Length: 228
Image (tube, rainbow, N blue to C red; front, side, top):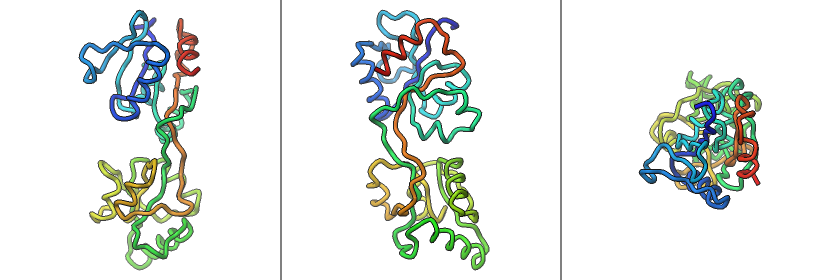
């Protein structure tokens, strides 16, 4: 609908709860007919606003193609997306929740490896002695590739992580991982440790807008209210 303002909210988890708190604080009452399971909602007394509950990654895609006007998602997911996607999205405000870092983590027993430079050595050893590349399991291939290349690590192979990334080194699916972590506790519990200079990106939840639709009626006021 051309005159509707479409807002994307993460469909589950902590992020959803924290975003909904913002709406409550601003006295914007979201109505969902089926409660938490609903995929679409509206705002009481605001006929022209539609709420869409989507996966946080999908929110980024939809902002880029203009089917969402405003979206709440993670800075990490914006930065992981393709450059042509990023160029179509504005970061309106970084929020004080959803904070986490994308890091490089290795199995604890690798005592000789403390920094990225040590990792580079291991990578060459793997290539020369074992005739294979160091495998890195991740849900963030673009950020991981760019980071490792920028640090001079080139002898690696990315493995798409489909579930709990921290299990990959212990199931023989990868040698190390990059993963998003807020406290590092899950990594520790899985006998993994973050390299000393292994921070790829600091992330947090953000309010984003689509550059495509920034002239929509009432949009400026709504963004002002949400980001105040």
